[in-house]
Length: 410
Image (cartoon, rainbow, N blue to C red; front, side, top):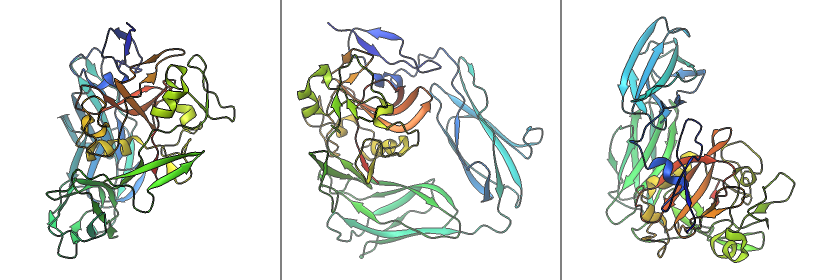
């Protein structure tokens, strides 16, 4: 019986342990209590570095650090943090709304992470300047419709961070008003429909328009106006999941090379087929190293090997897909793929992956999809699905791994 290799996070996210069965690159997220090292320093998200005109009521957020149990946030008026005005310790969240800043003032902020094994170094310092006048409020509005563009009345619409909950009227119109600028997740819910989620950035003083298309619960529909995509001699179906338009099948483009060879930047798109059998590429899609999939770009959201008008999803776009599926691996997997129900329409196949320079693992057991977002120089984020597990894995893996690729419409 083949050994199945587990991905276990250490400080550099190396693959170091082996088990007899059930292994997966997605294992990085399934053992939160086995902490042996301090967490890595968090990566700051908002406010943007050197940002200006920032509200005096501001949301601070950062990417969670693997293995972190708590976070410490410091805000000061100098880059040496000798004059700290805010110090929040023991935070169990990675986003915090803070008010009371002065107008026309520059602030500096940083975050570190802790667990039972120690404390990380601080993140790189960011700074921002607050607005020089009273806060200008903004609004989010739009129309809630079904896939036939018919208005939906009584849909519950709200944001996170929390603002005001509203309901669409008889024309489908909704309006969330008098909110401060910043980043929000916009939600819409109604009985009989799948939950809708979209990421919104609201600039102060500028109204945001966001129409919402809700899909009947259990219904799987192609993307409006783009039911199929023809690319490199193959036809791919599409599926609309919330605000996202996905290819419904794994990408299969390029020339097959054996699992014992490395994909290189030689002007030819190269692919792996599981166990070096072309029939597996035909039925389950091809497997690609991260650099080959990205066509040697390092920019999140790059087109990579996708057709024009499509791109390899970012980490945040994969997180949104997971949220739209209620973080359910079962909902994302095709019927027949373990306990897959495919209620999302994503139709994921457990295509396995290429682990190292010769071996393939976990066909029919695991699926892993590259994001276009790096974690560190040698690793990138991915979304993983696993037979027998109901939750979605969002982790990072070495770029030489051969994973599946799904394209997302621009």
